[in-house]
Length: 80
Length: 396
Ligand SMILES: Cc1cc2nc3c(=O)[nH]c(=O)nc-3n(C[C@H](O)[C@H](O)[C@H](O)COP(=O)(O)OP(=O)(O)OC[C@H]3O[C@@H](n4cnc5c(N)ncnc54)[C@H](O)[C@@H]3O)c2cc1C
Image (tube, rainbow over all chains, first blue to last red; front, side, top):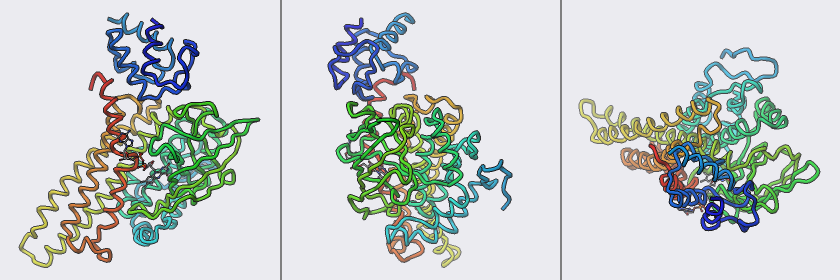
């Protein structure tokens, strides 16, 4: 799953560095992701994983790293 | 006036701070409003009166010796000031926006806590340095960066607009977190008097809000590294600066609109007195604009008391949920449009007496001041933000 997340970040995250140089724990905001970009990342995640992020997941911290995103996706899938 | 007995060193604020501010508005700000506007000068008399009444530290928490008033109370003060002088009101609003950011995001730092106590004691005025040459009105991006070394920071910024910068004690500036940080990875830094210089780069000869004295300037500063706020500016912006700005700005605009309608009411009353027994034709237009004013007032008051409750609740995320952000942004856009419409209608009611600059029913200043509302963070920028928030919000 982290591979799919990384591909989405590569395409939509508008990071100022190559995603392959970042660890799963690295701070995506410090890597240049803006809140506008994080909206597109979320939409792409929803389409890719066929999920919907409930409003309580729409916090800055949920999109702050590859591992934070993957935990959120797991949690949303588990709740279904 | 009686004052509450406060603990030693803490600031006594009168028992009815809103009444005190309303009195300063009508007794001081009103008297100087036209010269402030005409000469484009800082409203020194009104700001001095507000300092003497100890109104610059009202958001400082009780634990730091302050009166800890609510955001909705400060909003009501902004409204009262704007009845008579929008520049004074906007300066008061902008100052409290900076204080709110420090109160909500600086308290983990002993130095910043001590600063807040001192701000209240000395009634220090803080100005904001967010806008920058090269990023336009995009608050969430910086070109310049803060550099930290051996416990000190240095920060230089080419700012496009700094309201009352030359009259402020301290500044709150944004910058990239470090030399290698991307544009959106920002921090906020407190720049204290004596630690910064301003070199003016442009004039402030504007249509309205002339008394805010907001020319561009090159800021050069250094100071202790603890003055870099300990959290990302992204959080400060979304949790405090943006929502608090929208509430306090909208309150200023409401005050401008109410001031204009007040002049139209006086005009229609005068017409009615001239011909007792007949209702002047302008009275229906007055009823119409009064109705619009009520709509604006209802929405500003509703959102500001909601914001006041959320801020008092102590949950840092309470003001930044997507639903509430949409509401705040909607308030900014609608209030900034309604104020222009209301002032324009008041002008039509007063006719040539409203159009003249030397009549008691003059509305030129109100109209010019009102037009700044839509461009203090361009409304299209805000609508673009809401457009993307609506893509992700699931419930209403
Ligand atoms: C009275 C007053 C006092 C001020 N005081 C201060 C101060 O103390 N400190 C400070 O830092 N700044 C201050 N400012 C500046 C203010 O915060 C904004 O930065 C500034 O008004 C925006 O400048 P701009 O119109 O050139 O830029 P822009 O925001 O670039 O806007 C230009 C135009 O482009 C449109 N636009 C831009 N981006 C988008 C987008 N993404 N989507 C759709 N449309 C877009 C806008 O709607 C607008 O029509 C003050 C402004 C005023 C009017």
